[in-house]
Image (cartoon, rainbow, N blue to C red; front, side, top):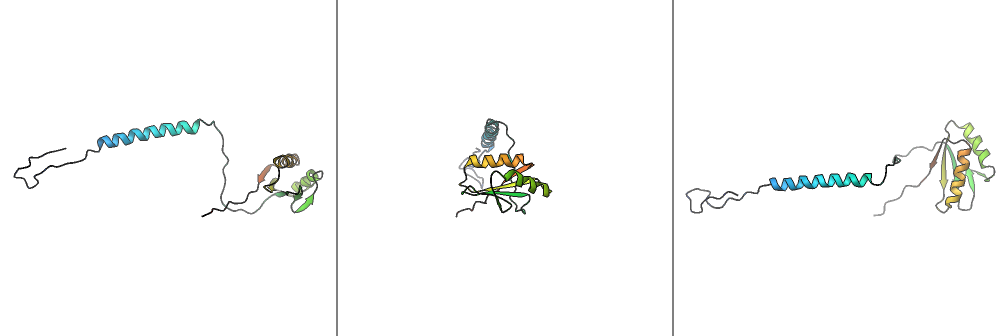
Length: 141
């Protein structure tokens, strides 16, 4: 802080105060470094995983569709089938389709055990990929 005499002949007589921002800048840089180090440690502490990527665009349905209802009914491309004939029906559907992807549509009330059993049958039938259909969540305002 620079000071000039109060009673001087200068036009700018009085106290001149200037803020020195160098210490403030040093503090900000130290805090930035601390946050960078702690954030990288927090990200890597959970273990290394390859997270799936989701595309937010709408695309037309492709592949074979398997639907599970809460009443334990199974549909392959809108055709009702029993669990015992699911694998044979899927093999026929996958052989006629160039795309070996199966889209699994299940009601939210279907038990996980039933879904896993159907996914196992889908894989045995020769599906290259299983996609799980979901409805977009509406944002409440």
